[in-house]
Image 1 (cartoon, rainbow, N blue to C red):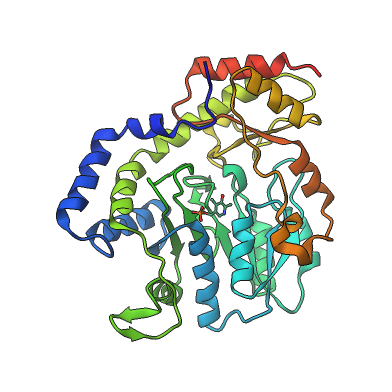
Image 2 (cartoon, protein in one colour):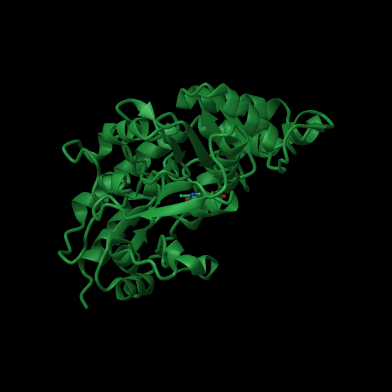
Length: 375
Ligand SMILES: *Cc1c(COP(=O)(O)O)cnc(C)c1O
């Protein structure tokens, strides 16, 4: 028996009939871009997040690129301005910044939550700092009232990278409605996954929403009239149709993830393992909306041995992520920077299988294997 890291076939099979119907509606309509399905998804998404605007785009990276590009067009950002971003995020957050000729200022995460250490931000603020890109990493909200105060004090925009935390909330406010603008990814493996690339931006700022919508469509609001040097990054009708189906079930799926995370947290007792640390640890994991468990990430000093051992026991795991962005060849100029917490996280983390369709038996097998690991 093989326990897959993420069984996308099984996840989508749950909705197979509805997805096939949605696809055939789009095929039969003969209309594939900027049509009713996208409009409907944007409306559904804005309602779900409680944001004034939602704009469908091509993917999550583009969502973040377009937010920053939008702020450039509005005159809030200009070349060389600094954007604070966690050092241990997926590289896409940082690519969005450098793609716009802005400077990423990397900040270490908290060692327990893996999220940006809000207490370290203020020291990094300079005259050129214009924005903070928070990342709700692994599905856990990165937020506190102090980050809002800090942004206000220094006139910074807060941009949420909400690729991993669809449906999470802080005091009843959904991620995607906490900051000034948010980027979403509907990459197939994300909690709300399309059947291909897809993404979106949410914001309450009307001007920003208008600019982003134009920027994703060649910089044009009216056909053959171009106000900006834009790009082509639009959400396909067929992906929007799939997302309209899957959005109906996301709360159920996120609850199924919480239940599986709760089982892991109760069942794993191997003392060498460092378990994920939820915010609001007084709440039961099952009831704690600040986490949607996109990934269940543990730490172990002998991570590679543990991964091999699990593999030999038929359990697939992944590492999110093995190499920090600042150590990548793509960012030679940052290779010399040293972030000890980020480095140790990257050396020790391991993502266990977690998904809405994992069975109790599978969860029990993973727990048993981990508890019996010796090295
Ligand atoms: C997936 C992801 C992105 C990029 O989304 P794509 O749709 O793959 O472009 C950005 N940031 C984070 C944190 C992600 O996990």
